[in-house]
Image (tube, rainbow, N blue to C red; front, side, top):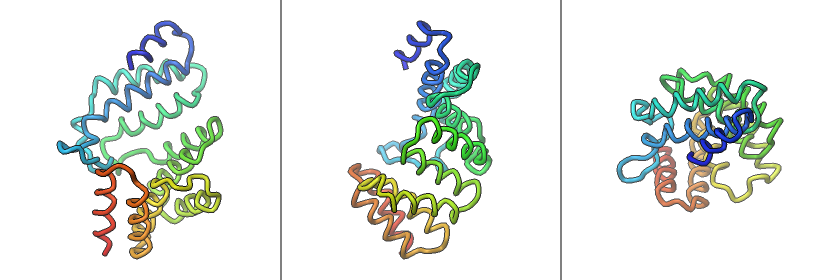
Length: 196
């Protein structure tokens, strides 16, 4: 964050530097709520938003405003996604349609399978799991994130929302086998067990 602030001071007219600073501030603002006292990850829908650092959010939004002067690049678009989350009072009240549009724009300027996977999550929240599952299935078919636990994690969540519990459980168990982080693996196994 200190480096991003230094870059912004040295390059005050460079929008992407302000986009990077905004992304750093907005991401760091949520750190206090992202893990429980024992280090277990806390999912976005379960985070206590009162723990989010409001001063960091204000700084991030100010940097994003400066980044927006000539259109947003990859950092600015990621910051705009983070800003949409940071501005929402709850997961349910998040402007998911806006996040879908921002991921689509990010996919045009900085395409990657991770961007597509994140877009699928946003599509699920905006329009339901069925359309999102087809996006994830395209990623699986293209083998673009082979070996990543993220794909079966998202696929498992979508299948669960569609009521396809045995398939969802299998995907979450696969995600747990692929996940190297012990605490994240425990969360995945708990979710899989809940589908038994």
